[in-house]
Image 1 (cartoon, one colour):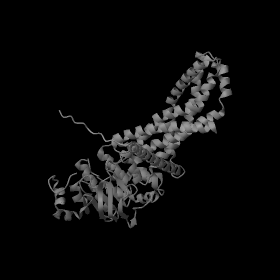
Image 2 (spheres, chains in turn green, yellow):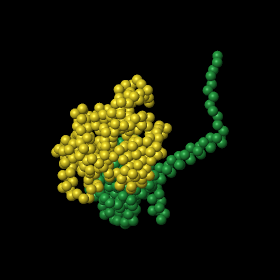
Image 3 (spheres, rainbow over the protein chains, first blue to last red):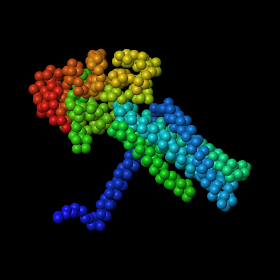
Image 4 (cartoon, rainbow over the protein chains, first blue to last red):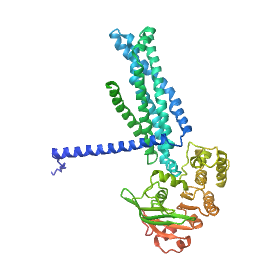
Length: 274
Length: 250
């Protein structure tokens, strides 16, 4: 009986290595081009931020959308995150009989990391996705073309108000997150670990420095720029109907979250080392 | 006058405009005809500077716009009005705000009251009075098109581009829009209208100049009478609306 065996091509290790390097090189070029075009886009955003017409009405609309409409979700999340983190830290500190430091540890973590990061993640999910979907829908329905045809730059009309609103509101939401998070930790500490109220507050005042809050707010500001700019950029690059809008939104959220995490590492390193 | 000199535009390997030489006279109604995918919309986007050719030059009113930068294009586009295929109204704005948009963005010489008056005028002109407060999703397809036309007209442009103005509309609204196109050109003698359409009946009744595109080039250009008299088998097939014939369908 005749058996057929399919001959697989064989590659030498050198060929495989060369192909691997080629693939990697191609990826690097693509990422480099994307980054270059994103920086070009940011340059346009900066240019239109300081150039007439200033779209104050649109800015206030976006402030309401990014800020007011996100407040509830930030309040609930902050309370939960503060309480949960307080419980976890409290349980660990209890082993060393250091529960009284729970408030200070939670406050510091909230200021420097948890509040800016979780706020950014929440705002990316609620606001960034909506921004991308809205602009992408306008793009695929030729509304962006119509805008350009009417000699109006989409960056000026659509992007600048959104990015500016994010830059102004997200740090404020971060501050709210810190405050409510500490209340969450207070509830967990005072009512579940029976920490003395005065002690809880005193340790926070003693160990959580103004510098910690500033660091968190600075992070939050940078995350807001990344979120706003990427959300709009993906929206404006959308193509191909409803599917294109979906793809743009997914890519926008994923890229924003990964970028925020990467930048978080860099900023944290810079803040701690310098 | 709008001129395409040896314009080529490709998307990937697909050549949409192939060494196209086209002249659109000023102050007339020119219809660009051709089956789907022949580059009609692409041509109009080149005129607006929304696309750039791979090769060739585009001259509008004696100005070579091919290499215009973003700033120059923004200034250049102020002389245009454009009616998009799906009207492209901004969903988040009311009808009144949509029509007001070009005025609010570019016209500094009018007061707010004058602008609102002008919006009212053009909406009456397109047969849609008192709908300023409505939002685009509340309108029918025909109404959206007419609002889009009002928006294209409101700032009194020198050139109006119509991308399939009567597609998807009932015969009455189609005829109304065709009449509007003619009426506008009669009222404003210097107005240049460029219409992309599949609607042969409208083209023959309305156009002063016709251009028929096939495979990215001009198969025939002339008056409606030239088209009626044409013996070109491709033109005849298109006019007869038959699948059988020399025309290739990709």
